[in-house]
Image (cartoon, rainbow, N blue to C red; front, side, top):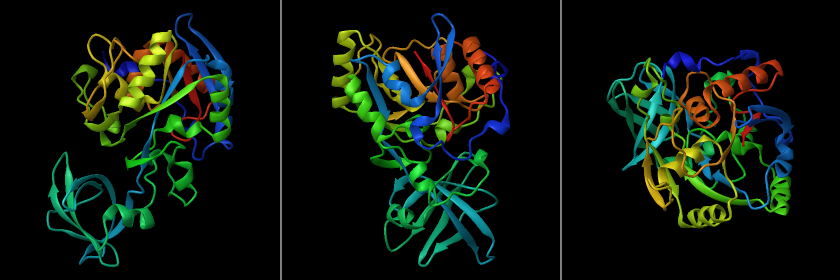
Length: 339
């Protein structure tokens, strides 16, 4: 398929810079691909839209406050670092804007600095010098890595807003945003409805946001991200599938985790490791029946994954409807439910 086929309707004035409060009052566009119908609902109506016995699968990754302002030494030039992945032995993969050569020292705080080890076209690594583990230092001094399209600096409030209720395992540089809509009240109502809940982990990294730069999307290669689908989640999924009820993925990260753990014959097994799975229209889904997801940027792998489940042309119609109805887009925006 051509990349240009994913130039979906978009209006930059619809980008949400802050979440809807309460979180479960965000709008919800419901898509029924079988009859190509659309319905305008709200997140807190999820219990009525799902059936008893359905299973919600959420991502329990936790966003690391990984953005840090630093100073190059000895020049004093300001620079921003995004810590992406702990490679062990105080070495981290990072993203740094601007020019930095191997050996460059970047001062981040009292007795805390980063020394550039590798500066390549596809990867930059630094060695961290700190009296305490960097992850611990970031919890105190780092800022939340908000997406650049929000065009604002993160605040202390974002430490709460940009984290889901399910966040347990630290390691993501971006939130699994579909999960941001859930509140304790909504979870209680879903439980009363008889809707189940289980968790998987996918640490959102640069792979999710790697730009598609090729004309033929099949030539794109995803960056690898770490996932874990545990035995408890597998048992819950198999029990629900045996009853004929639906597996409802909360976010594209959950889709990638579950489909990576699926075998060719359709069975799912525990899985712990990396995934570089890239889903495009025509992908044979083996586990996921339905999807709750936010609206995504044009020409992204996230949008292509959703098109694989909903159908490209129907999804394009849904996006056009969302723009007409002034839905709020992206990380802090509204959502769609594909049934």
